[in-house]
Image (cartoon, rainbow, N blue to C red):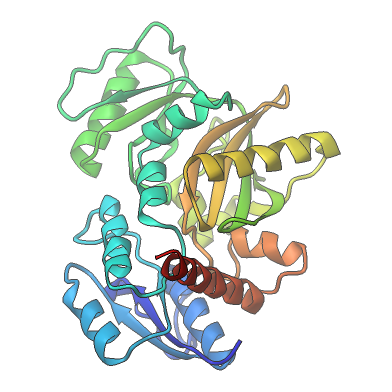
Length: 343
């Protein structure tokens, strides 16, 4: 591909430096995706301009009209401090007729609401944990169909935001306390799911119409404290020192039969299509002891730092990190070209 003008949208607090030298592991961890994407695309010969976006669309419009990027890379996970608003930024790019990477607005909307995505997927006879949603300021009363233990999450935040060991509850008192925590501290409705004892499984999917399913990947909990639940908490996801101390690792899922691997990958592809995702996404499962992959959530535009699960799974099948980013750019431009030709 010829060199492109690439505009990269990032949160202002995550603007990547020119070099990572002199920064602590935790500081690097905060903006590693932004740094890896910008530096890798530059090394590939592209003209790359990061743009901090927090609560104004005008800077995006100004750059599109004056700099005229060939494609926009969207690394935003929120707008105006709201996670659900990232779909509106992508809608704005569509209205401006500029190619962008990652998922379309409809797919972002369908995947963002964990209740909606589970309902749609369950309709297609894909196993999901039993769940209930507790809206804001609504009394917490556990339905009889939900047996303890349960796990309590924000309805629409991602990145394990708001998830800790206290998220798994084994009494009605703890359930009410944790739902209130989500309402008051996270500021969203709470989704309460049946806790599935099993393995934490991820499957990456790349593509618009023709899909490439990446290897089945697993998050393992090597040295958890006694009594801790093996779940992907905020610390597990984002604290390098905690990861090292507790031997939190990710890698190819082991000891799975070829039939089970095929079943999980095919299920991931079905979910991707059901939720109308495109670009790239990661589908999260909990694999129970009897070999049932329960759908947990879909993550369009997942973290794509070179060290994270998505890029590592791609590398495992020979897709280098620069090649992965190039594919993501190409998919964004192909989608835009298809819409223009259809019009």
